[in-house]
Image (tube, rainbow, N blue to C red; front, side):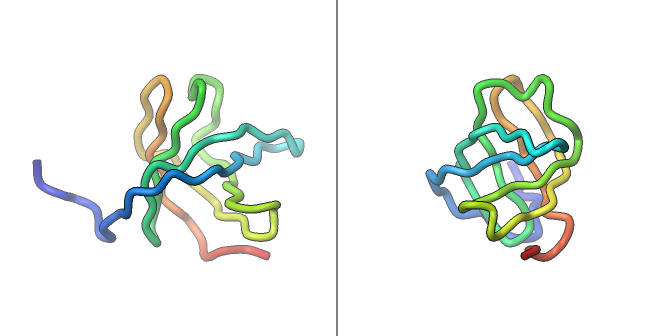
Length: 85
């Protein structure tokens, strides 16, 4: 299969949080990462919206994400904007 990503991803195993509107959060694991996107592993992706923010630490660095693909437990996301403070 030909790689279609603009930025090659690096395999990682890093905890993160999906930040939803209303300040609710969902814990996830980042499985691979690049400057343009990531693959997230969650207990379930069923109720997650098409856009959300992702925190790699205690909320100091948020990335706006857009879902590109989805399975029952994994999401492929692209980062929409540079990191926010």
